[in-house]
Length: 226
Image (cartoon, rainbow, N blue to C red; front, side, top):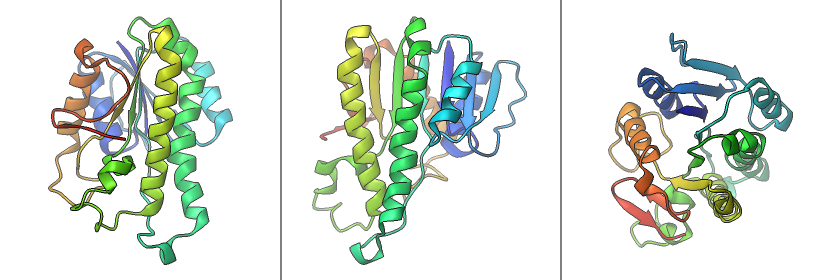
């Protein structure tokens, strides 16, 4: 299969790209800095800032093959954990990367996905983008950054809208909370190696049985209410 993954410069994106390429899949990776340094002919890397719509469209124009699975992994954490620490520029920055970057990539590569046989989009979100999860008694006191939660909630809504639109074209949109991993944003639970999380996501992506109406899912654990 042909995979397109954003944020492959490090962390989970790097682990996903390496694992998929080693499995023999064709992988196109995007990051604004760094490269996973995968010395395999079935991996191609593109330097691109997904916030910049023109740059994303330029990469799309360079890829002449279909895309079976798009994994929108690129994202950044926030800082302000209380209202007096929060500033509008931080919220805008998180929205630019975590929401608009995802929108830019989905829009630019929609034709590539339609040309494929598998037709799947997987957006890497967070349980902290779930309003109901943030209201749980054990979670509400945790000071996770406002901007991160706001941006991931927006990404979740975009995913639902996109899933509603594209289902008639046979394109599945899934939303995943990847769990806590080394180098990730979560700091409240023990963290897994990114490669372990990557393997779990790949198994999910290749499993036809996981195709369903768009839901926020932690693989093998829980489906979160929005």
